[in-house]
Length: 422
Image (cartoon, rainbow, N blue to C red; front, top):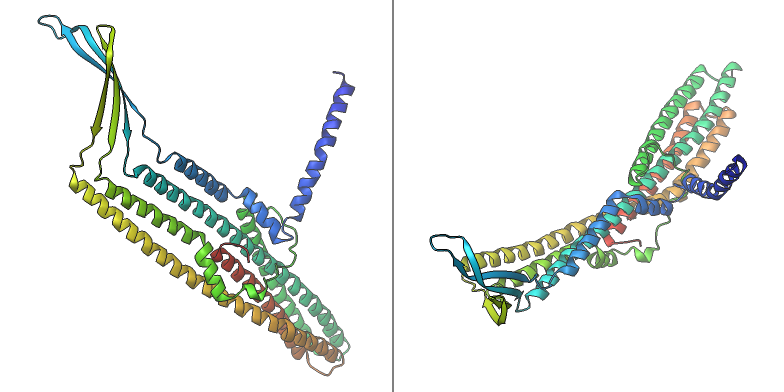
């Protein structure tokens, strides 16, 4: 191949892969703008979810083989062996029996074994679903923290810029003999305080970024795009506590796992009780007498359940396991209800307070801050009054943001407990 042909081939290959490279970069650049993209990426990349899915596949595969007949037994018997006088070494085998034997579990034991294996697999599948729900809730919570830190930094920056302008006004008033040096000093002190707050917000944002990268299994310090808005809360009719409790009882994966554990323990108890009933083995032999086929032999064998101590112990253990599984379910249900109710009231509190702050407190303090700035420039109030108005405005905006993040966190917890998105 000539150099020109090689160059053309390389150029053609680059043209083919460049769209994919730019598409991947564009996707990475947009990651973080909304929570849905983060959730999808976490589902795709999470090693914990991948491991849970593989465990569920393995459990389902094992369940398919449960309840089948055990492997048959092949037996080769050498009979009527001649030996030399005064020696133990064989000289001739007069008869050889070739036997195939198959054991048949009776009394419904195969069906019970299959149901126990299926229940065990259902536990693993429910554990996989719980892992997925926990991952989604963690991503949504981390995204809310990321949004909160980003917005808090933006709000603090806006307030600081306003304060910087007021500091310049205070400095000019002092230079013109219209104000005191204390005003300029107070402005610089407050600016330094806000700069410290900005550093704290940046650290909070880095923590949230690190948490998101860990959940998405991305390299450390991988950047995210600026967050968009937090997801809007669901309609009020979907957030009714009795309906949420009902959905928890029917769809929570932890409760499904406990139901499967009860089913498995119940099947194991039935199997232990049926161990008193013997299984049957059937065999067929072909007889080779002096290298001539002499005919066939058939056999039936039955295990005699004489070891009563062992069977009574197994039944007692299975009965205790069943009772324990039922008690565990009651405990899981009680804890889940408590967590759901706590998350519900956290959501209600955050929703109501955020509405009050957004509709009443924030507009009033913003108006008061603007009025105070105008009044200070007109020498009608002192700088401390202006500074207090600015602090109240910042506090209300940050408090509103905190309750929005708390609302998002409570909603993620509710969705995890009720088994999916509302």
